[in-house]
Image (cartoon, rainbow, N blue to C red; front, side, top):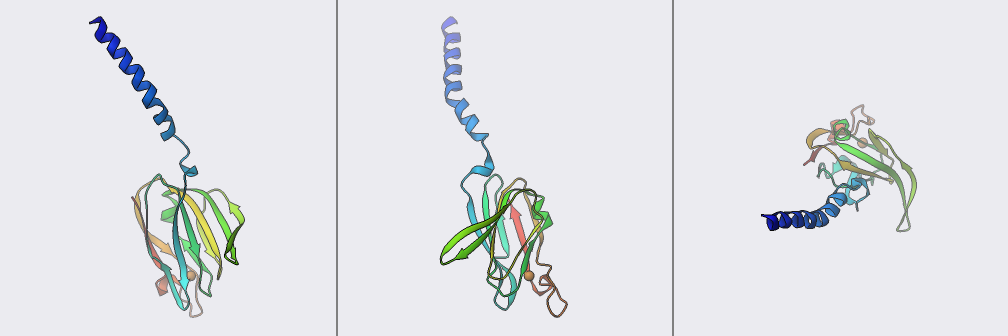
Length: 161
Ligand SMILES: [Cu+2]
């Protein structure tokens, strides 16, 4: 009986030695991991659309959502539902020139929507914190005919698993 107790105490000590460091690592800062890059094009020449228009993310991972506007019009990336499911680490304005990208500005805090001007790029760094499916991704800019880009089909869906 005495040796069994000793065995239990030794087992507990060994387990504490191996398990404790892992538990500490798992409680680290989720917003400081290597980001997963996802690129969305805001508009195509002559076409109002998000490409792709279905986005999928997983909770607990850090994403760098690159919002590129290759079109001749400004476009919004707006989804209030999406902003309720994520923690924003930062938004960066990036200048791409001669094959090099330079960060011009960095914004921190809760972000509701981002407008990207023709030929420009912004990066939204975030960690999804809740699961859900939202279908309110849209660009609300009104074109010459009075219709919004969303009414021309610039809408999308975001799923967080
Ligand atoms: Cu638009």
